[in-house]
Image (cartoon, rainbow, N blue to C red; front, side):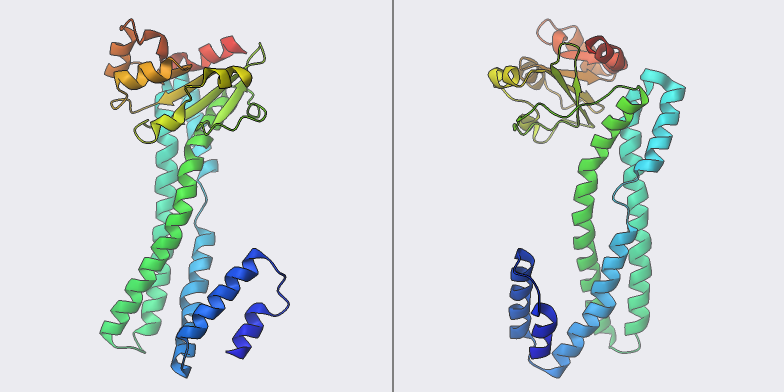
Length: 285
């Protein structure tokens, strides 16, 4: 194992990465006790780890350019009436495009590994190795998938604002509350409106607003606007609780939830039709 230690650690600067590599080496040292073990780990690196790393490079972080062109064409055709579909289109295009790339890569790598191993190992060992490969591939791809999910809706908000030539700004200075805001827009009176596009507000909805109105005042946050396409889980309690703390919901014009809330004296000030989003925002600029 001395040559392995030299390869991994020689001349490596003292960093957190070196600490992790040292931990990996000591773990391997306990497990590699024979020539066969060395052969297995070399095979794994050459035929599993390196190909998986190459596959990840071929899977897009997002489908932004393609999705942006489709969304812009949709908005040119439908205008503000198309805002409802924009969020869904953006999310669906990114999801389907990236999943197709994931599928292409695993089929290619799985086939190559299967062809190579089928000449070397027994059938039951082949099944075990290929299953382990698929599990590791999915684990690595899932990590990348998490990042895409967050960037997707944020990009949708950016695309909408860019299409209508609405300038965004950096967030309020020193504002550290964990609000899930995609973009900030500065108003004519130098306050801020936070804007976020979401399919739904089902999970973690309590992170989507703050009850500290003093905090909002100190950082000059005028409103938080949410564009939501699936609003069936948007209860009366959510609307009134969040609405009383400067949140405004932009909902599909024809949704039952919007129609009901817009006619209710306790909720009507907190919901607006999605088609009025751009017009309302321009009034604030």
